[in-house]
Length: 67
Image 1 (cartoon, rainbow, N blue to C red):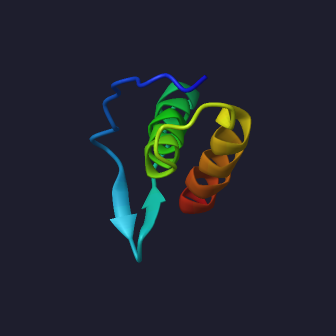
Image 2 (cartoon, one colour; image 1 turned 90 degrees about the vertical axis):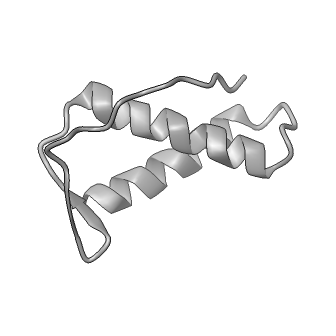
Image 3 (cartoon, rainbow, N blue to C red; image 1 turned 60 degrees about the horizontal axis):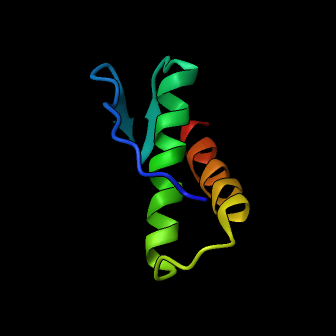
């Protein structure tokens, strides 16, 4: 089950070449992952049943951004 959560992103986050460079807290990172997972869910047409794969895909995407 995907849950839409509103989050605030860090104001100290800086972007360089499309990568996010910051010392984000675990809660901020989890918020970004949740937002991305919801976007994936929405792109699939809000069909239920793929919440875990949406989350893992979002996690992979966000973590690659943070490297």
